[in-house]
Length: 62
Image 1 (tube, helix red, strand yellow):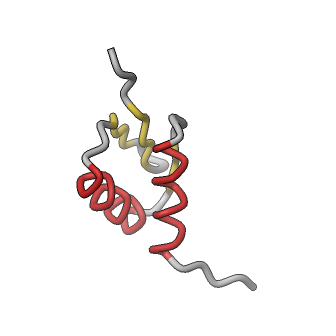
Image 2 (image 1 turned 60 degrees about the horizontal axis):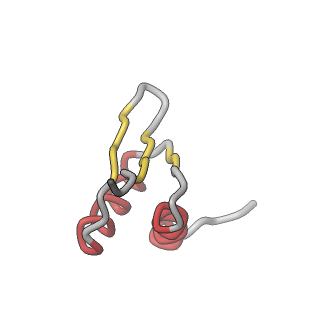
């Protein structure tokens, strides 16, 4: 059985977003950590909340 560190998973997802890709998480806890980190880095993303989880989609520069 694997034990995942929530903060580490959130930071890995933020790296994916920084590279221009979308990231998905199922838990509200992880979504909160990601939002906190995105705000700190001032990254512009669209957040899509669904019944199944949270999508973070980077906004393209115009």
